Length: 105
Image (cartoon, rainbow, N blue to C red):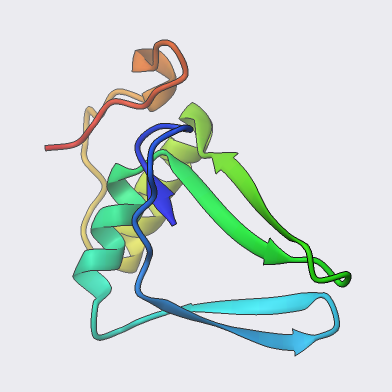
């Protein structure tokens, strides 16, 4: 799940998770919905990662990209989509305020 703010309701990525071995999972993003997934990964600052513990209880790991993570995602997604990174782009660390990332148009 991807979301704009920590307490916001998340939007699911179009993906499939598979158990590799005990305690290890692999998440594959759908190639059919790659533009949708890329948009969520670029625009949203927070991840919700649902989990089921060995005892059957459920939990959610909530992770923020942070400003450095936002910069890394921007570079990686530009390389992944074969688009040159924006020149003169201001780092998210330089523009971040109150723990939220600036939204892209």
